[in-house]
Image (cartoon, rainbow, N blue to C red; front, side, top):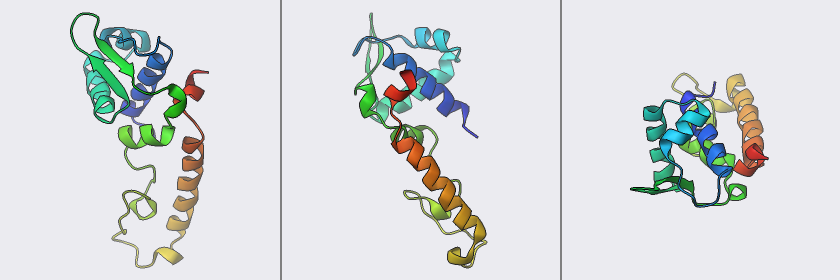
Length: 136
């Protein structure tokens, strides 16, 4: 299940993608428009800024804005920042691989085979979807 952090992060990013490019938008405006707790949104936007998706401006007229064009922002990158590994189990993760303690042989494990298919299907959707696709 998608975490609230990821859901709210996607909602905030789509809101920012609909704004004038590079125009800072205050957290309070985003929170109000998307019905998100302002305090929770602050931590999400900070994480997205540290990951290079957002820029910020302090002071009067300050706020957050997208650094890249929405067409350049793939869902794979956003999902990994907000949600963590895309794979549902560590033994099929491309970036966070770990063996499972309870599995002696990945090659004969039915769960492993199923989760590879799930991971690949999710990756296909995320790779072929950009932030632009969510707002158009």
